Picture (tube, rainbow, N blue to C red):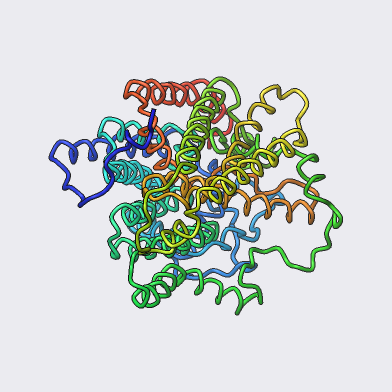
Length: 547
């Protein structure tokens, strides 16, 4: 089998949408958005989205004229969701740590809040109006993913199923029912990804600039997007198809556009706190484990398992503290995790995709190890690098060395990972989520050597994902050294990187000629798992803490 021969035709001018496709996109938007509105209005209690109190307080600050609340001064009041039930000591008002984030999402969410507050004094409507932004963002996210698949010439039936798959991730649908910047960031990242893919496949300079513009918008939403800016812009410059003089003009301009918002936010942090990356943790904190090694760190506590659990199924936050009838039982945050059959099915889907990536990587490696076509003048840095390594022996050495390095890293890391007693599935989860460690070095080499844009796109999606994962691991390690606890282990931080990884997955499935009914059964399974999760787990849990 030659996977490249069965790849979709991803080149050429973009075709306008047919009337049927437009109607399908509208129905997708309505279906997903209405579901999120229903969850946010009648199922998910106020304050039971992760950090929703901080997010809502940030929105209200902006709506009431405090456009840039300052970290260390902004607070979360004790009457944010309701009037205090008694005069007992309370942890409120407390510092609002959420104002560490750039303000774009909160400025947008302040608009429906302000409109609702002008119409009525009822908090119920204020909260639900503010929650509408996330619901709309999830609906738009599905539409953008659908359009991206069509841009890649994926069959519309497959494109619908791939786009809808994200709407069956329970944590994401839970977030879409609340006040949080995560879903808005996922949407903005998806738009940036769409223009990134369009540039790679069609080389329209306009798409490179639009990608950079949407990346800076992502950077104005959350600092975790800054890593994506670095990775995507580096690839854009690597792929920029221009004469050298024009390249030297446009490369700095594209880079500048992409970092305008991050530079502004870093400058603000530097002015107020003396640290461009300030998030409320000072450098003067004495490290609890100053001599901890990475090997000791990965053996000390679980890392991959809680990431996937919180990526797929994490619910609740405020617990009894926000419930008047149960406030005497207040125990702080109260969460539930989905770790049974729906979660295991999701893990199985991830395994199948990871093995598909692994197989296609092997096939691409074997193809690139064969004698190459005659060289042609390089029009991009990527083509110049491919020509530089045109010698067959050199290509074989690079590919084999990268494969050995990735495999060796996998075999060294996996046995050393911490295993929680009683979690029989944890070794299985660790084994799945470490597969990108095998593929990462080889994907880097193949992205340099490949001459087909769709082949490189497969590897770029994986590379950007792995790049963020390594940065994320580094930050968690630094926090562990400081406080001797796992902090910030949240799978939702990976959502901005899902659109590009999903696009890469679509190409992998197309190149491996996976039939449409396989897509259908896989996504139906995700839909059933999502329904089961809410009916059997989430709603009964939330009823115990409902305001």
